[in-house]
Image (cartoon, rainbow, N blue to C red; front, top):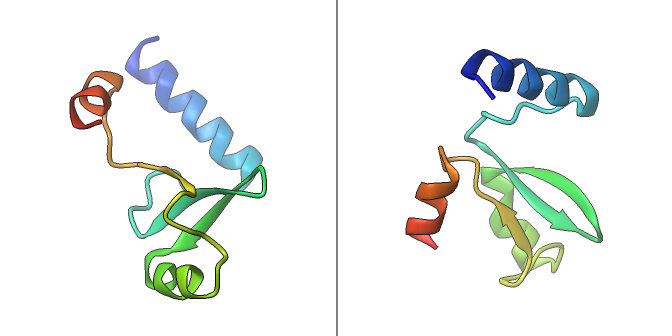
Length: 73
């Protein structure tokens, strides 16, 4: 996909799910089989209350490519 097509696809997803995928202060977690966004300032509280744990899957929205993801994995 070209950059323009990727951007259009991302925007479509953002509209459909009413999210901003590039807001670095919103962190994405998979909670009870649903994707949930948490503001950065609420992560400690969510951990403390058991809403998320160290084993909760996290969407790292700072990774720019699959290759960089693999390098950092």
